[in-house]
Image 1 (cartoon, helix red, strand yellow):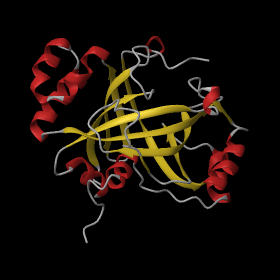
Image 2: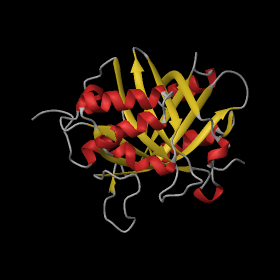
Image 3: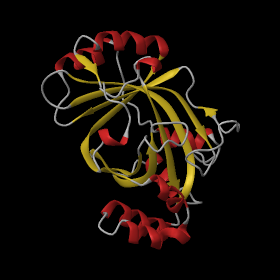
Length: 255
């Protein structure tokens, strides 16, 4: 089994796929997962001590008007947002930190990401340091676009979201991935690694699991049967939106 260390990741990665999401009760999540195990296997990044899951942390960027938030809430077909992502709760030079741009173009979602140097983390959190980033990452389009969009839209680190993920991948055939995300928490902090003793964490959707279905061309026939058997309904749910609303930074609908 791989661990979540830098050597096991590519310097740059790009994904384009369809993404469907479902909100499940704890009991329903267990029932569906028991069926999924008959057709899929664990992703190699799981940790046995985390009940075959791994920890995910994302620090999302937005401006004081929460433009990215409202683009998502309003269902804009063409949109994107930036985040810093890592897989540990404390700073560890062996655990990678990514700059990611997550977006949507019509019906497909995409994600582009690049590993950043741990020593450069603070540079991504301060507009006055962005010219240094351009010099340190001269041929990196993701970093260049991040700097341009951050200055243009006045993006700043806005909300931190943590959760635990149990991932499954296809044993055979086309790309097909399922992830069960639970224990979602959020925090109104501008740091990727806030003081663990601070009370920044707030629970989001406690008692529920977000099931994410990611595929390239089609959904496996056996999963179609699960959708029908449990009468699953797709939801437009975003952990970024859950974090912003959970921290009372913005509202989904005006009163």
